[in-house]
Image (cartoon, rainbow, N blue to C red; front, side, top):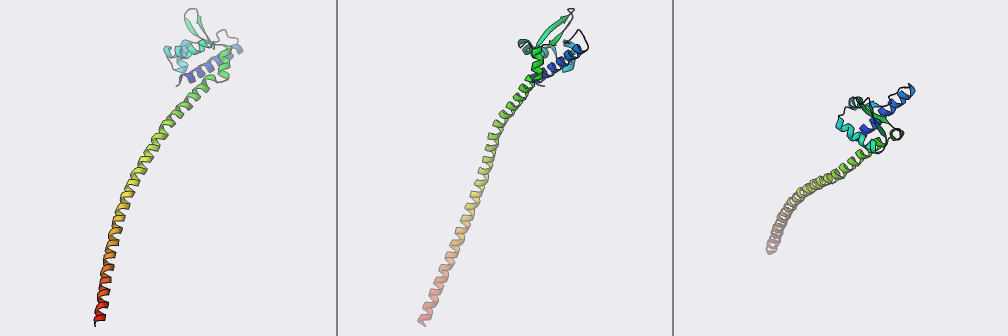
Length: 164
């Protein structure tokens, strides 16, 4: 799964957790790192990568309870990023750009393949046409020879008939 999609999901979970905590008057309005690991199926490194941009943009706060339990809580800026689907839009935009890149590679390759196919078929058609042209020329030559023979025969016949 893409990092930006995981960011969006984490903001969603943190936002829901915060809303539920406010409704139920709970004191803990964040999620511990262990809960985040389980919910997103990620490790500590991935969480640091995901949360680093949150921290830079002040979308989450890091907290530590009793020095043991560490986690994240969402800020109003983070809730705004979730509601505007900031990271989900970026994820979709990246996928669209990847698709565009792929298409810009695939279309020229397909056009080259089609051109090669056309070139091959046109070469075979040209060779077929050459063979047909040679056959036609041979046929014309043989017809011409027969006509010449017939003319000679006719001329011989008429000259023989005139002599008689």
